[in-house]
Length: 166
Image 1 (cartoon, rainbow, N blue to C red):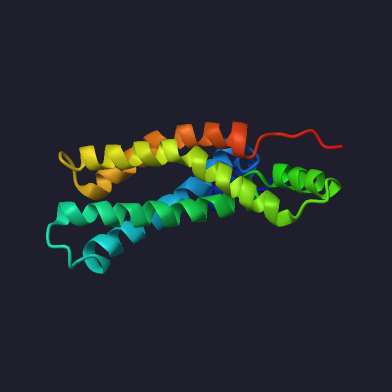
Image 2 (tube, rainbow, N blue to C red):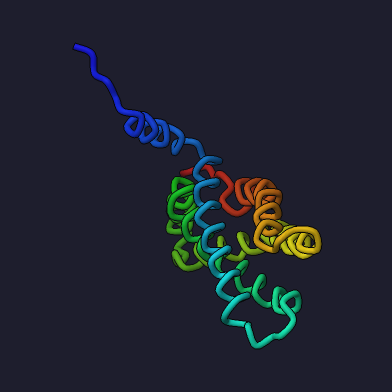
């Protein structure tokens, strides 16, 4: 008897298989961050900072807020899912050193934030530059894609670097 899988089941199986790869997980978290970023950017640009008359001027504040909120979102999900195995090792090593789990959390968040600054600066600058030629939302998506590679490498090699367990 041959079992036929629907195309939806095949896609679901393929996604489950891909989730084993760290860069894919990072990409999925990044996709969620992009949704958060775009939603906050739109709401801030069109409503929250609407009192700033010049749309290009309010883009500075809207974009800064969108990037900040998306960064916290991405750190949280990358820590809980993408690099969860490395977080457990780091917590175990710090417990052996009798340090608080909060020191691990704040240390990782600090490194994540510093590591993300290159990508954030790249995204911010590219979005502002590209928005002179493209719609600001399209400019932002292009900038996010370009900045994501530097963010992955910095976080994989520094923020959540592999530590040998005892």
